[in-house]
Length: 99
Image (cartoon, rainbow, N blue to C red; front, side, top):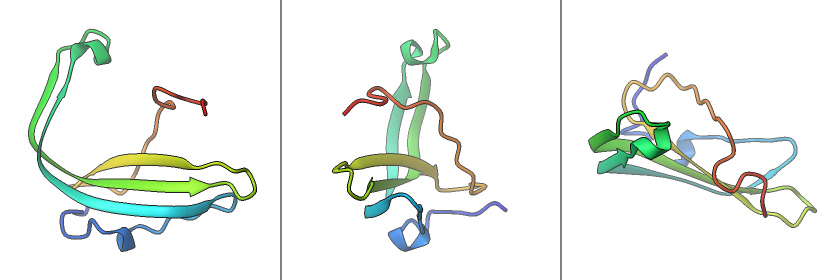
């Protein structure tokens, strides 16, 4: 199923749940006319990618593990058009596993 998030980029569209964590904050904001550039340095020497006038649904979730005294924030940029509803995450980012 392919659908558009342009009209439904609101927190109520998403219903995250986890048996081992507690959602503290869920935000969803429509971003339009965003100019993105990813330098070849970040793409193992492949050409730089330019994305002018990009639109996406910026979703941010902050959660905690009860009784662990932690707070984790994750952010995802979801396409506003022709999204198949799937999400694939790879790696842990620049500070993977640090606190």
